[in-house]
Image (cartoon, rainbow, N blue to C red):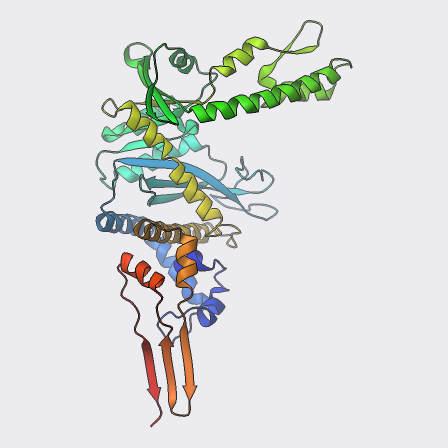
Length: 420
């Protein structure tokens, strides 16, 4: 089932046809849907142990670096009218803009190499920040050792900071650029940036007093700053056109819409007369944030460069989620029971693990590996003397992939049945 997710994602019922017609599983016995459902029950029964043992086997095999753990969440929806009795399916804020449908939340932790460490299936209406306590406890139980958690801005609450530092853990968190007093103090701190690469400059600052003193790293990307400036100029030009039309009319819903607009509203102020005007002071404030992102950390040993570069690797989680939703077809989910949903997500996690290991070892994309290896066929020859199962000859590209994955090439003649 994990191989099916990686190669040709389909429902558990459709796997019967896939196994019979498209692949050779090494057995003459026909695979049936009931076998799949029994396997899903087995996965659920040993849910935690399987993830732990698979990860440590993989970590040992690949000499994985597990000092940085990257964590993020996503959610997926169910195309049903009502969620029904469930601890998982619920209405919440959909990251796919489908708030009208019940959701389930999926948490994923990966190493700096992009190997998925563990997955979590959480209620669809649970806020991201509330998942941190469970995630930290679960991975601490694995005795991974010194761990620095890397998470985005949605996880940066004070309670989460305390949770992540339990058992000697540390954190690197993305911070909001606006609306948080201590963060704004850090951003105003004077000092020069140190050039790490052409697209990464860093500056270390401290803000706060006593136990509230916090270490920040301000990262700056000149190329992103140019894009931010261009996008702001386009937004302001659009805003000027909107205001020219709106200020000549009475207060309408359109004016309120401009004030509440996420991109335009931050640049608008309302005069006593009720007219709307571009706030030049706010525009100048935004200019100072171009190309910047703000990080905070509890670790006093990592350099500012390592902190910024470590946070940029959070993209590995986003990449993993894209793989889950596209290549592995996480959705649609045909299961309605919570236990089946958990098993389905775990299968996707195993398939993701398979894909990432293959990509790392071969230094190729999964699409390339799959395209090359699917040209290897098993041919059945039927003659008056019997039956022969023979593989097509391996191409040089196929041999390279198998060698890098340490997979023994298949025998040329798999089976020979001769009539007496």
